[in-house]
Length: 128
Image (cartoon, rainbow, N blue to C red; front, top):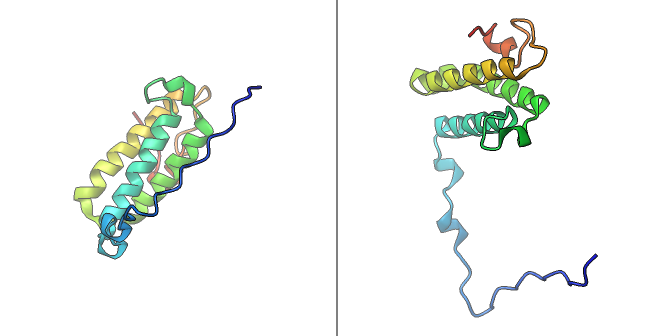
């Protein structure tokens, strides 16, 4: 235990102008659906990669249960949205998904049967 007292957050100076958050953020209505979908997919891919231990200091963050959930969600999103976002956007997402599925199979101590791995319900069996 220490004798240090917790620091209180500083209150903004009443004389300073407050930031215009409306000007700083983009109106969600102006964001095309394809951009929202691909952004979500990239976040799912990144989180899955970290949980697969593929990031720097990988084993420290490795959690295959979490990776399975993220890959499964990514597969559902990519499969459901592929016709809406077009092959230009869907193809790299499919490639990334397949890479994560293969990395999951490699990282598993007891690999799933073909067709039973994360997301394979949506994509079919994944072979290296």
